[in-house]
Each structure stands twice: as C-alpha cells, then as structure tokens.
Length: 272
Image (cartoon, rainbow, N blue to C red; front, side, top):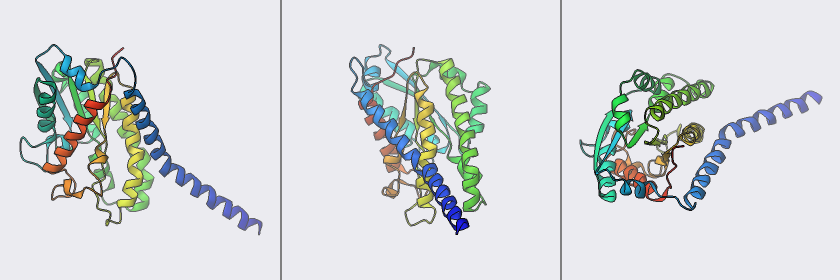
C-alpha cells in the first residue's frame, strides 16, 4: 500500500512537471505580449511607422538575413516577404525603401551566426535602418530527422538552448555595429495540418521556442517580434505553399500585413 502511494505521488509529480514544461511558456508569451500592449499606451512615444515617416532621410535601408522564409521560397520573385513589406512600408512612410535580401535556403542558426560573426554582413548592418531576421526552423528540421517522439522531447531543450545562444550572439553583434537599427524578429510558426499526428505536439512546443525569441528581443535597444503565428497556423493552411512548409504569395502577404500592423501600433524603443 505504501509503495502504491509513492508510485501515485511520483506519477503526479512527473505529470505536473510535464504540464509546467509544456504550458508555462504559453503563459510567458501571453504576459510578454500583454506587456507590449501596455507599452503601446505610453505617453510621448511614437510608433515605428511614425518614427520612420519622420526620419529626414529620403531613403530607408532594410536588410533581411536568415533562411528560406526570408529568401521567399514558395512565392515568385518580387512576391516574397522582404519585397512586399519594404514596398508597403515605403508607401506608408512616404519613403524610398532600399532592401537587401540575404536569405539563404536551408541555413541554421549556427550557420547564420558564423556568417554574422565573421563579418559577412557588416557593411549592410551598419547602413541598415531595419534589420529583419528569421532563423531556427531548419534547426528543428535537421535535428528531428529520423528521431522518434521520445527523442524529440529529449533533445528539444538542448536544441532550443543552442538556438537561443546563436540568436543572442547574432543580435548582439548587430546592435554593436548599429545600435540605432530596428531589429525585427519573426515567431516560428507551425505549418502542420490539425489532421497531422504531430500537430498537437508542435503546437505545444512552439511557445517554448518563441518565448526565447521575445526574451532576446527584449534585450535589444529597438526591436519587435512579428506575431507570425497569427497568420500561419492550422486555421490558415491556405497561406502555405504546395510543400506544406513555406508560405505562398498569400502567406507572405499576410505576414507583411502583420508587420505593417505592428509598425503602426507598436511604440518604438529607443537606444540608450
């Protein structure tokens, strides 16, 4: 009988620990986004759009680095996210936007970090007014190949820690080279259909990943995280390309519109 009590307690503790591990990041994300909303209500602040509209320069420079989502896989040339957002921002801010798309198909956060640290983008970073970064999806894809469900759980925290360090290193160098640039990070989204047996697991694990993106962004002098998961999710599968992973034209348009919405409604942090 005593053994049974211990066994029940052990199972309850394990269950509670697993629940906290899975669901606490949802709460963290909610709190971070709520804090951002409160910050939007602050006095004597200007939105990102107003800030760029008021800049004296006639031309703004937008650098985008990262993976195939930055590159624009899934859409035709000039229909990619970087082109669409830059053109939309130019119209809204009444400025010319010169954009530089340095997306690399298949790149991981470790590989991007290496390029950034070795100075591959130094000149472009120094010139940029806006620097958009999207990376991390390939970290998970590469690590999950051939693994079973249990192995994915076992490696997830280590994989996430490596990604967080890489993103921290990347953004640290970016802000060191150009502390006045606005750094734009994108949430990692779940491209799976709700019918997929892995959908529920991915939907639970993603907040654990994305909360670290918000934490990295909060350390930066001027930054925002685009809520990609609002427009690419199980209820908006029409925004995915035929490969079921990348956005299509509609998807990139939806992300671009989300970026513009946040540029209009989110107040800009300023460098110290």
